[in-house]
Length: 164
Image (cartoon, rainbow, N blue to C red):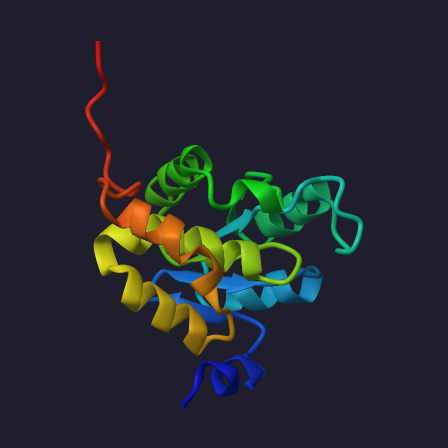
């Protein structure tokens, strides 16, 4: 299957990248309830609060998630920040600190896929990151250089010792 063929496949609402990491575009109340019913433990919203294209505000998404028994985190990430190592490491720290399957969402799922790739490049390798994201409809070739940079450094999912 070619890259173009993979991209044209319409993926499901929740796109699975690994056993504990699913991504989605904008969520509504029913989506959050479905996530809870489907075994998700944590919702991570990376939408900036000023993103008006999604229905739920951070406050609303938090209230619904907590009502459904889900942990909820809001870490707003703008598009220009997704390939920045600082934001990737902060996101990796957040992900590493959560328990159970997590659903990370943004407007379309693209930022979530980019961040997943950035935090897994060192552990999985760039080729595997590119293949997994492509399998669910996101072509990360546009950030391949950044993924290669991240692959040469310690994983953002690994706690590094603090310098005193």
